[in-house]
Length: 112
Length: 146
Image (cartoon, rainbow over all chains, first blue to last red; front, side, top):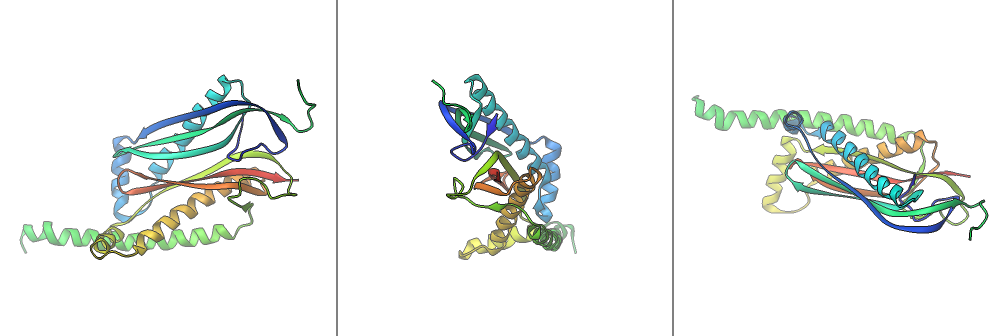
């Protein structure tokens, strides 16, 4: 699956539009991580546990989005956007969305 | 000095000072590390949604990086004071800039690893996590130039 956040796939052309696909996840830290981050809050700087959490969340959201695109028999997702929301204290939602499309290489002969 | 003064006055001041001191050391180190890494050769970054006319690109791939940064006690204290009189909160502005630069550099690392020449459509997305920290996600489409 080709995933990009621009409107086209360079070197390819979009032959079919399969529609909007999305994936989201809401992650909360376990207590140990929260306590560690609480201590870290004293001195500031990067809160690695939270960074890891957001990285996992982003991967998961993208995976779910790709899964939807697969079900639509798409081979690429274009114009992907991320948005995040703080749903409850200690939990963050990560939402990824884009447009599932079918692309073929520019060199491929035109179909149908 | 009684226990009351110790718990309600001395302890918070000590925590504030230790936090502010450690925070400024961490900040200085981080700024040094950012400056060093920004010097390294890397892809050209743009928030244009498509390559400029005449530029032929291939191997497009989504790349991203994120960083969650929190304020230290010193910065929190200063921003609380600033809240009373209003105006620019310089300490937090610096913190946000650090978070964005860090997230951007991590995205650049990913782009560099795939041998990209350009990163198109670079976007930033921010959100608050855990009450006192800010998460920055930086993402874009890494491409090779032909």
